[in-house]
Length: 327
Image (spheres, rainbow, N blue to C red):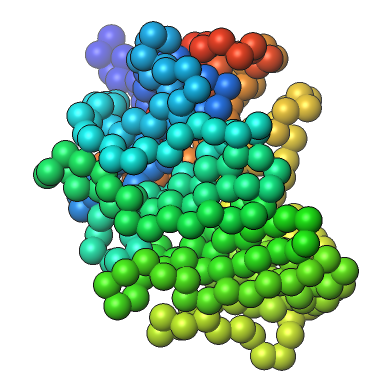
């Protein structure tokens, strides 16, 4: 009798347990500079974690450096990779900043690293680095300086990146890709202020990226057979659809939403779909940022990875955690 009752109770607990217990949480402590973040990439079957301004101890964070580090990552594991980074971008200028993205330019299944280094409001440099894990080195294979700042970048697909550089004169857009054995600009366009041509672009859904060509008119842009293709005729896009963006680099789009009654936006993710957010939304002194969804274990299911730490820290290194959430 007692055995039967126990079994019934177990079943009831399993059925009616809140969805928050259906996830696994893993975290690892780190230290971070004021300029920090991470990206997830692929090297064959290996998942790569590139960190910026993040390290295991504050002593390892070199002053006046972006502190780029490469790791192997799977759910519950982050292992540093000892590698020689040749010609690493330097932290220079009045307003130093860095943006990084993994992209498999040459379609070999091994991502390259796309990096934008900002010096000031009118100077930046774009790099592409190739990873050689077996040789334990990272080499620069392409770079170019630009008079302005990279206002935005977005991957058109897994092999091409659309980049927008803005300065006092106007905007310069180009698509960086791979052709005939080298990194090249497959397409480029300039516009001057006072004109709408190619002045900005947005993601509307998973397959549509639009470039603005008029006050209320946008052109769809995509890559077909390695060439840039614009939609004909021009397409009107409603303002409401522009408020839906891919904020966490996964295959789904999110609406900008407020989490609970707090003013903080947590990656624009609706908490109804991310039950674990409830655990992190009760402390106003801490925040979540750099939320990315990726299949860390190559099992066809995405995990969420994000940084978690205290808000309003000073310029000194401070404690953060890298969290992983498995559903």
